[in-house]
Every structure is written in structure tokens, then in C-alpha cells.
Length: 313
Length: 249
Image (tube, rainbow over all chains, first blue to last red; front, top):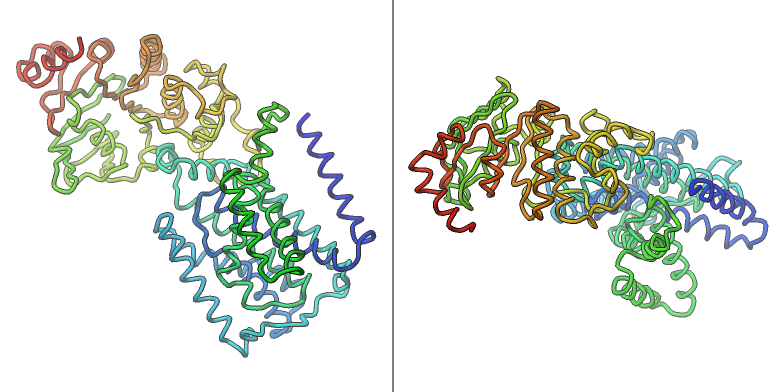
């Protein structure tokens, strides 16, 4: 019963998004795609942070790695773009494996701090290596295959790919691996005592999260045809963490909602004032004070209390 | 089955366990007793690998398991419950036990099949056995303390142990809950043939169900023997039993 309802909702959303480019000006198509890309990035962060309890403080590095991986292959090494799109997430996954192996021995905050340091190191390299990465200018005008080079083409490609990525992350979180990961988040000692190798599972989660951040990075290249070092600067990591907190970091779709809130806020409030972050700050404060589990977390709480769902998943 | 030889563990100079020894044979129920702070929980942590002993050896089924990390001792066949309730509090009762069953079957790496389609029968059987099947859908943070302690045992049981270690299984339980818990422990021993090692403050329970008893005082083994041997031992009476009986009236 619950399953049927969610399938109907999903279909409705899919149809809505499919017809969006026909009813809205081009800018809004771009904005929607940007929200979904950012939301996918924040969801991949939340995979490790909210569901794995891993202090993934510098997740944007893997977003940047995916984007730069693809961009450099296309613009500097002249590879086939499709091949580059596949390679991007793999580069991101490889980088998260390397950084993960180094950090995983540390717990919680120390893990996060070391990850910020190593991530910043990667950022500096990208920022300074003009001949290869374009330095602080980044790379612009990246040519993508003609079928997805139009704004509609880019939009549909982004939606379908992000949809698939979300589906895969959802399935993984509801698999035994995902349950185990959430078990580790809730209680490390108990997980060990039932025979779970905590580090191995956490490392796998970090790599999966990095991979999907890389997918988001590639999608940004498709939508924007450019990459720049800010994509892997630590402030973006903070921003996507805020999105996850705003939307609800124990819920699967919370980060997507949070991304929509932040991106819309930035787009429309910054038209009136350059201090749009002030509005974000007030919003964040209100959420932390009154909705500590985020907006979607609160919605589910009310929903569950009314007994409308059987499954909190 | 389990042999603990002269293990010691210090915490910044304080000898929590001091050359303690313990022996558990297959099929036995062995109790460890001793005053608060005698090192019972630390001893269990040393056996299960939560802590590494400074010296001494732990041997399980003829294999040296000294210092083996806890997830590996679990795979060897030792699972445990904790003194302070230690469960996955955001999950339902059913999910708590299912995770443990999945881990026992080595399926925590399965990444695409939904958990809800897996090991439902095995999980239900365990909940049936411990009497929590009626509460399987409750989020376990909301359970009563007694039910949470029983859930602890269920999680440990799902690991299909040969040796089940229970750290004060009835602590904080109401009298009815306690008697149900004792029945459960007896049932596990008789019907499943489990070897059980537990510690407990309630002497009635200890002398009611344990085959053999190990007495610990200030981190060291005072004696390990049958109920009668322990009861009649003068040193035990001096160190522990008399004092305890006076307190527990």
C-alpha cells in the first residue's frame, strides 16, 4: 500500500520534471538542473554523514575531482566525452579511497579535520597547476556531445542520471550494507560485537559517497560546460552540509530539499541584497532551534505520529 | 571450551584485572561474581576483545584469541550482551536482530537487495524464542528497560554463538522480568545447548542457575568451583558473601 503510493508520487514528479522545460523559461530549466546536481551532491554527502555517521567534512573535493576528471580528459587530453563522463566518478571514488584510507584510522572530529587538510591540498594543486587544470580560472567552454549540448538535452541527461544515482543510493541504504552502516552510526561497539568490521564498512561508504559526488561533478560539467577551483573549496563542503541539516539529515530526500532551499535563496535573495547569507543564517538558526532533525525530518515525524506510513524508510 | 589464564589489565596504574583465571566447559553455565569494581566487566571485555590484556592468554576451543578484535571473536563464536543497554536505538526491534543475523551470515556487504526481503524467518524465530515477537515493530529506544535487556540477549543470540556472555542480564529488571529472563537463560542452556558465561549481583540467581561459579575480588580470581565449594569457602564468605547478604536484605 505504502509502496503503491510512493510509486504514484514518483511518477508524478517524473512527469512534472519531464514537462518542465516546455513550460518554463530557459533560466529556470538551468536552475532546476543546478538544484538537482547540488541536491545529488548533498545527498551523496549525507550518505556518509547522516547515514554513516562519518564526519565527511570536505566532501566537495570529490565533487571537484569528478568534474575536473571529466573536464581535463575532454578539454586537455581530447578523450571521448562519454568516456570522460564515466571516468569522472571513478577518479572521485579513487581519490576518496586514498583520502579515506589515510583518515579512517582517526575517529570523528579528527577524521574530519584531516580530511579538510588533505582536501585543501588537492584544492591547492588544482588551483596552482595552470597548464593542466587552468588554475584559478578553471576550464570553460568544455565541449559535450551534441545530443546533450542544448539546454534541454543537458537538462534531461542531468535529470535521468541524477534520478538513477538517487535510486542506486536509496537501494544501497536499504540493503544489508546500508542497514549495517546505520547500525555503525548508532552504535559502533554493538556493531563490532555482532561481528561487523567497522572500518571496512565505513571505508566502503566513503568510496560510494565519493563516487556519487563525482557523478554530481560530471553533471555540473554537462549543465555548465565549465569547472573552477571553487567547486572543491571547503566553503562548498560547508554549504552542502548546511543543506543536509536544513532538509533533514536522517531522511533520504532531506538534502535534496535543503539544496533547493539554499539555491533558491541564493538566486532570488541575492538579487535584492549581497547579504543573502544573512537570510540563510537566520533560516538555519530557526531550523536548528525548532526543527533539529531538519524540515523533512519534522514532516516525517508528524506523518508517523498520524500513523500514515508503515515504514520510516 | 574457554580458558582464561592469568590475564591482567591496568588503566593508568590501576589494576582492574590482576592475574585472573577462568575456565568454562562446553554446555556449562558459569557465573562470575564479586563486589562492585572487582573487574567482572573488564574480564568480559578482555575475553571478547573489546580490550587487549596486558598479559595472560585467552584460549577458545583450542585457539589462541588473546587480543583478537571484538568483531573477530564474534565470528569465532563468542557473542555477548552488555551491562548498560547497548542496542541500535533508532531501529525497530526486528531490525536490531536482523542486522545481527545478516552479520552472522556474512551478508553485510550485500548492497542491492533490500534488507526487508532477507532473513525474516530467522529473525522472527529468535524473537519468538526470547518472547519479543509481539513488539517486533516498536522502535527499540521506546521499549521498557527490561525488554531492552532481553533484546540485548536476542541480538547476541542472532550471532549463533557457541559461548554466550551475559553481563548482568537482569540488572534493573522488575521481579517478573527477572524471572522471565532466568527462564530464558535456562531455556537457552537446555534447549539450545549453549555454553553461558554471565555475571550477576543477585546471589539467588547465581546459585539458582550456575553450574560453577568464579569469585573475583580486586581483579583476581579467588576461587572457581561448584556451588557448594564456593558457598562453603571461608575466604569467599569473608570477602564477599557475608557482606553482600547484609546489604541485600
